[in-house]
Amino acid sequence: MIAIVDYQMGNLRSVQKAFEHMGFEAVITDAPEVMMDAAGLVLPGVGAFGDCYRELNSRGLVSPLLEWVGSGRPFLGICLGLQILFRSSEESSGTPGLKVIPGAVKRFTNGSLKVPHMGWNQVRHPKGSGGDHALAECPLFEGIPDGAYFYFVHSYYVVPEEPDVTCCVTDYGVTFTSAIWRDNVYAVQFHPEKSQDAGLRVIENFGRLALRGSRHVGTGARGK
Amino acid sequence: MLTKRIIPCLDVKDGRVVKGVNFVGLRDAGDPVEVAKRYDEEQADELVFLDITASYEKRGIMLSVVSRTAEQVFMPLTVGGGIRTIDDIRELLRAGADKISINTAAVNDWQLVARSSERFGSQCIVVAIDAKRREGGFEVYVHGGRTPTGMDAIEWAERVNKLGAGEILLTSMDYDGTQKGYDIELTQAIARNVSIPVIASGGAGTLEHLYEALIQGEADAVLAASIFHYRTYTIRETKEYLKSRGVCVREAVDFSDE
Image 1 (cartoon, rainbow over the protein chains, first blue to last red):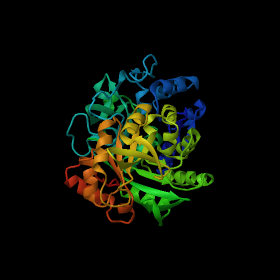
Image 2 (tube, rainbow over the protein chains, first blue to last red; image 1 turned 90 degrees about the vertical axis):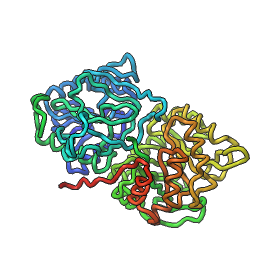
Image 3 (tube, helix red, strand yellow; image 1 turned 135 degrees about the horizontal axis):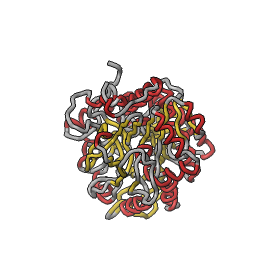
Image 4 (cartoon, each protein chain N blue to C red; image 1 turned 180 degrees about the vertical axis):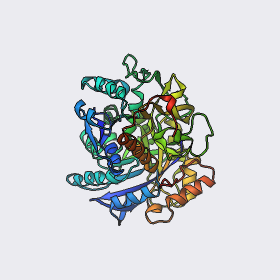
């Protein structure tokens, strides 16, 4: 079973439906004991960074989330669920993030581009031309070719301090990290639940990772 | 690169798809969920449902249409038409809509744009503007194009941008239903004066028209109904054409297991 964290931020039903569509049981919950029973945990999120942390905190979910991440079981952050893993955001100065991944969250500042970055954009391997299956290095992107399109809606982007956590990048005025992977923690800036076949493939890959109960032993263990 | 979006629009009345020409003369074109699935398979970039149900009491039908669509279609879905309050917006988002388009209610109460974008996020608040040419500019119309407001369309677009709208759905009243092409002058004037994406609507008859709206009109997305409904062009043909003209569009990818 996949648990989707309910903290009143965003359209959780569409994430749940995407998992169900791919044949996985998924529940929306804010109960830590239900989360701890799950094979995989998903933190979606639409809205502001500060509100996100406050909602998680007021529901007593910060510790359970950190505990989950430490447990080694697969975690998937989506959109704000990626950003909140970082230390802080320009969107809400003074409000901390979960500090799971070192780095910060910045606003798009290129004046000639429209903000939010809204629509379909490509993800590619951070090290450039890795061939058609470059993204498959990260199990979340298994079967998804370099250059695949996903649906984005955001005004801020993450800047990890350790380049190794970036598993794909996207260009929008700047080249930004559009997905990260460290051990059992996967997180994407785009919305897989709104990205048609490519997105459903990500959902399916995560579901499989969760059911496999894979406990990653470290970033050194990357590969197929 | 961020692609230009191709968006089919379904006019929905009492739970069924219809298409108006110049807002009159409707013809039934099927079940919205089935049509949505077809566009999903063709990899349209987004979908818009415009609810033209006359009676406010029958609005529950649309919630069910949205919810059934969201069960089966995994692409961004915008719902507009007759939305008046924060509660209307919340219900539709809960049913599975990703963005809500407001028109008359935004003109009647500007603060609805600010309140709703603050509550639900700018990304899900679209302001629909129906504009008609007049001496020296463009005027905003409401009530499905029946009522002139006296307001200048460009000023109104700038205002809703500041109020927190995440996107503008711009329809030319003069060109809608004519299939003679989008109003390029109107589209460009709005696109250049706002910092949020603009969807051009009204007048698509050929693929050349879509190209003009995206390139000369500087729109971020194009919306069309008839040319897609009546299968004049498929989404795939549309994207192939635009790509051949150098427009950045999302190409169809086959993800069936190798």
